[in-house]
Length: 169
Ligand SMILES: [Zn+2]
Image 1 (cartoon, rainbow, N blue to C red):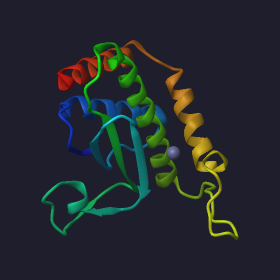
Image 2 (spheres, helix red, strand yellow):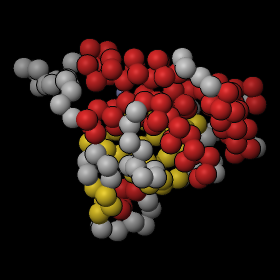
Image 3 (cartoon, rainbow, N blue to C red):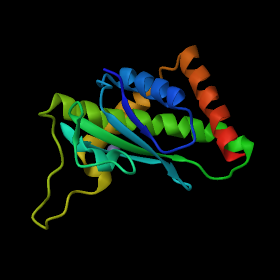
């Protein structure tokens, strides 16, 4: 199943689809989920929630109340979309791919189910970020996937850097 992409950036849909599909495959997640890509001023982030459907209004501006199916989870990622000098484009592209790998690992967790997740303690708080098993798994998965680059991935990274540069102009 193809990614259900909702793109709120000026980056081309086709490029985002290829990046998301490739990074999902690296992690071993099924890519047929809802992914909303938004614009970040500086900090590139992502989040994943477990779900089987999502209201259309969440996916896109002007969306209605009807529900759209998703495969076990949905993702939002925010990619940097502010003016910056050309020299940082490659770094930003590399970081964006790392964010995708990390978030796909959370997606895989949702799709597999039954893996250990952090719980709220007696205080009602969840453990610190770095003590959450799902975060440790995601970091491991992203780092080890990032260590297995291929020429194809390098090409995609360069393509993203070039596309970012264009949107910044
Ligand atoms: Zn995480």
